[in-house]
Image (cartoon, rainbow, N blue to C red; front, side):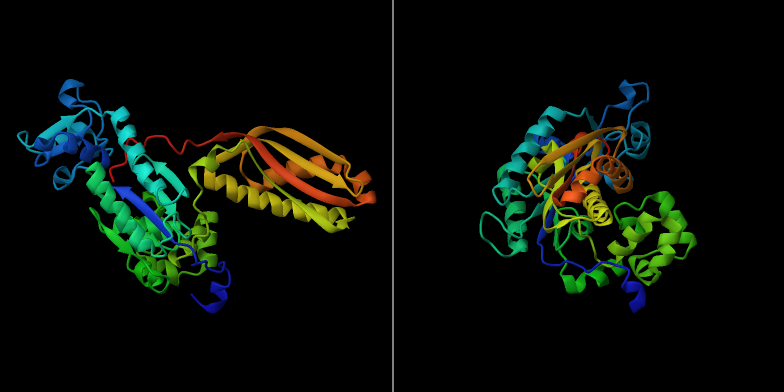
Length: 377
């Protein structure tokens, strides 16, 4: 990628210290911990297909079963054909137990920091740039957490330590099981260049096939591909791939308690005041772009947009609109905010706008706490 192409990407931010913790074959490991006789067996967490008329899928499998080619989401009947009958063991999932163990693990995470973003029962990001223990080394904190999980809960985990979420997740998956990977800013692009595109989170089989047709097989190939080419072929996803291939991910760790917020808003007091409609609308457009980023990080979709305007006499008005369909798209948010603003703009612009704000509320959401029945990591 030449210098001009590189200018299309945002400036990287390497100041944060992020840990991605991922439990190793979580459900299967919990079952083995509670019944050590299963340790040498090919353990499948899933209903025995001989008892379900051949129906069902593998929820997860231990590493013995994986040596036979078994993986999550595989039909249990196929797993039964791959593994010798005297080696295979099926255990019906026990989600209340898995949730209880997950709560114990999360308690250990919160001993380090409250900046914990849960992805599922067995996976989370931690921002330890500032932490409760006052330890500067993220690697030291990650080893401490991994060790405590092993000693106090009896389970193995893997972690990635680096400066952003995307790389941290790649790191935790790099050397499983019981893996420890640290990726320094100076090493990121070299590390990514060696990875197959299948290892890039978010690049599914269909996208991989299209990339292969373009001669792109590795992160290094992505790094060499012009950003404009990726944009043309994949739109926003192409830009995201270009960012990730170059070690850039500006999304922040969104703590679990933040995800329960009822609304997200941005407002600003202006000095001098705003008298131009174009200036006001430009600011609102920028607000909506930032709100889009915030909601997408949380998996939120807003059903209501609210604007707030205050003049120099501190007279404040709020206007709200119920949307026809929940959205987290900045353009749709802005269209509604603009429509609301023009109904009141003339009077307030004449007097000068001291404060301007946009809020999104009444959320629908993708459930980040939903158990991923097909997660085998």
